[in-house]
Image (tube, rainbow, N blue to C red; front, side, top):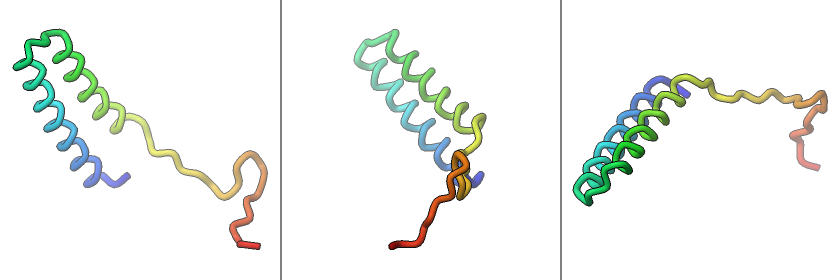
Length: 69
């Protein structure tokens, strides 16, 4: 995934996490707000840490025929 898309997606996740954290706090859910914050930041960390899966034309030694029959 290109870096520009990762940065944009990270910004969206941070904004949604902040809104959900504030909303849970306004409802009085003290523990859940920290779970929301942890999950938001964990999603960003995992997106930057783990590489994107790239498939080759052959998987498991079997060649895939992409031409329609």
